[in-house]
Length: 198
Length: 390
Image 1 (cartoon, rainbow over the protein chains, first blue to last red):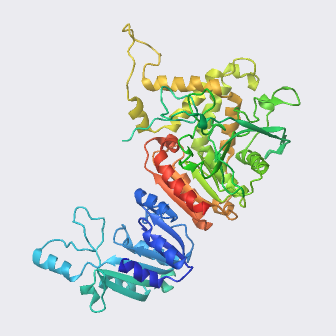
Image 2 (image 1 turned 30 degrees about the vertical axis):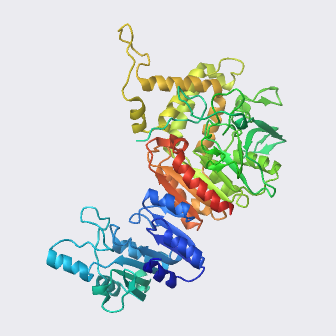
Image 3 (image 1 turned 45 degrees about the vertical axis):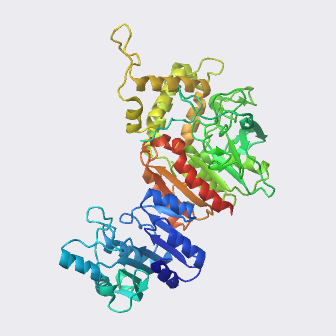
């Protein structure tokens, strides 16, 4: 199992409700249903992924995150997940704000752009980095925003987003020390502080 | 682009082969169920009422595997299989049968002709018991909810208290929504395709053009034409307008282009149907009048126009009591029932906290897509039903 899913699985409480934004083929939600008996709903933009979700037994809305998420009431879900999708939407700030409104807790996972191997490629080779967590070339990447673990932490501080927990990985390995340098992926369990809503 | 032959609402396609093998196991027949009377939304009573219906597959012991399939504007009870001696199968043959989307090895599928129709169920061309003549315009105004109420009697007659699914496209989809709202305890899952929760002004406008074509035909004779030719021209024009709205600009371009027949003598024809699209529409119109009653067309299109499952309220309000799980499908090139109308249903599902799945299928076939995108629909429906049946 991939270590990111493992971390998310630990954070999500049993029998809770989960909305996965950019749920792909529904693999993570199916896992959460199986292991944690959650009530799951996905949102996904790719038609082919929708077919896979339904085959995985996951209820999913075919929708663009940038235009959607309007109709849910505040705190509609125990958890809203943005796993590897926040760097792909047009307006990550807005999507995150909406997620924090809809979900009591929000899980955000993203590739860390300032991973040391990325820094080496950028600094010594002078090329846009390609790493296992950022495997695309400049011309075919679905990612439109590049952020580091530090960037996200600063954003949370500035926007009164409470970070309840965080975890960092480098492939299969958990990273404890200097995650902004040594982690390929950062995961945050966050919550709106309430000030955001006012 | 994949090319699919349009198996349209009816069994009169022009020169298209269905590609289905005929065998005796696939022979079906239409049955009839008659009940005393039906109280209508208009306040009037209609009775006795007959429903033409067909069934496919077998009802299981605890009667938990029944699926009600609902037809579109000009469809009928003959959804699948072949009638003895017929070349063409039912209108949803590619979706109903062993190992198909509605797998008749597992499920018991029922389809009935709507009331107000002319294909076996009580409608304006039926005999009015009070006068012993066809109803004509004495037939009461009917609504989508009236159609659904009549279907409920049929389901009750089978002793079925729970429907595993109700499914249909276009007007069939409206009946699906109505079923979920009116009988929340009966409907386990709802599968509305290419449909809307209420008719838009544009949709009403197209209906009205069709109706006006019929009303303007002198042979309509205020609906009193049974025993004579009837408003064939008017009904054919109504059907032609309908067919334009069922296709997309690109599917028409693909299918007909600007191809035309040259007059063999080289003469310039004035208004002969020389463009292929003209010939197609005329053929569709002419063959339609052989199987459909003009008054039924008037009544049913009016039922479509009156349709608003939320009855003027917010749809999410109407969905409050709904218990069904939804599988909603829309088609990108469908401009008659555009995406936003399905998205409105999705929005109501979110607010009402219903479990739902929504897919926008990338099709170029326009509204007709719901009858043509069989592969995509099959995949979604099969898995969805599998889960629902567990």
